[in-house]
Length: 283
Ligand code: AMP
Image 1: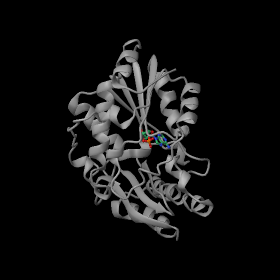
Image 2 (image 1 turned 120 degrees about the vertical axis):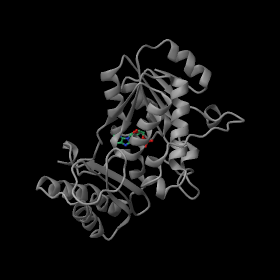
Image 3 (image 1 turned 90 degrees about the vertical axis):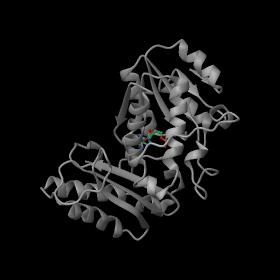
Image 4 (image 1 turned 45 degrees about the vertical axis):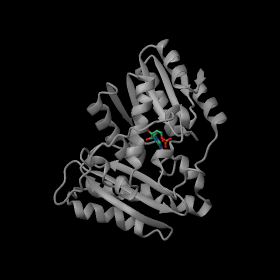
């Protein structure tokens, strides 16, 4: 496994590789990240990953400075998972002096996370455009855990023709349903117990949908009521939206993405499920 820092080194190493799957990350890796690597290996000859805590996607007062980091452990996990090339840049390698470009993806980036975290998806889209431009992979692998991010990145990739294929991989979860996240490291013992409320709420929404409930407002309320019953949980949003446009649904629904952002103690946690599709992870 080659580990490089500069754009030029990435280019040189990439040139020696064949069909390439690429997994961008912010590090502090868990099995959710590694499931993306496994999927990349299954679909391509070679796999590249990046580890970069991208400052431009954090707002003022967010956790950029304290975001958990453990590059040595991350590299060992990536090597064990069979990654060929890791880009571990310094901020100046990604944003060289004079850097002035930013990418705005449009309406899908303005709702939900985009509304709660202004500028977040500009930062995400810009850094992923840079990473794709440097790494030039054949496919990009992202997690459904960050549903809106996957929608934004599919739009970005298609509109700017940056990569041929974007693969969205299922959400990796703890045995009790909590979606794996680097930010779970912020949970103390009691908050960790309370954090199962996100997956429990989604499961309640799925149960209602599977039982035939199709009214958007009712489904949204079923999910919201479960979260609201947990005193340690503070709801940012509970959404029932069109899975492609992310526009909030009203009235009878067919395809629907249920998603939420909920603060439990220190971290703000995300989770989602597609009600119309199987989600074995949620049981
Ligand atoms: P991050 O390091 O949080 O920026 O995540 C890097 C990539 O891993 C993104 O495509 C995420 O959507 C994906 N990811 C994060 N958590 C999970 C998870 N629990 N299951 C599957 N993919 C995930």
